Image (cartoon, rainbow, N blue to C red; front, side, top):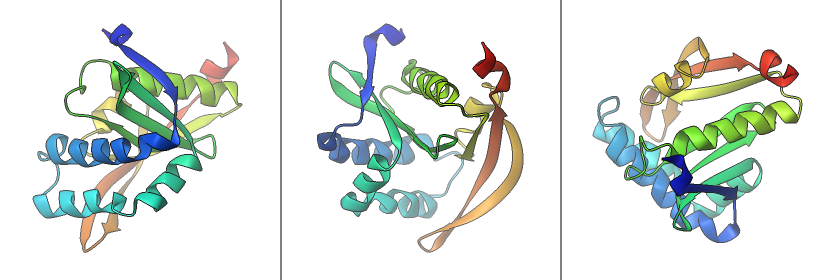
Length: 163
């Protein structure tokens, strides 16, 4: 089903739509793991669209599209940290996230990364476990007036990079 999706680099005009994907993903996909006030604090972190745009631009950011419209994105900081990874709820579970992650892992390995790390939400934890990540620490991070739990995970890329 992933053939319905295309992959491309971030374009400056994507930022408002990616901020919307960020907010919608949190609102609709994380309610089993986070309270409404935690979701609100998390979503508010993209209110400063200029800072959000800078964060995306300072990373290797890939965008998944469907019919040329963004449906998800992933960003890699310092060639080893999966920084942002969000898929619109309408595209969740249809292959866009897998396509984004697989492309990012291949790019990181090709650029010499030996490991990938992520501070994953409780909602996305299983996605990363299925891809060979292991938990290294449990965290509680301050976002606005809320504390949100997440898990630091990593995956060694030595075998993949050697192929």
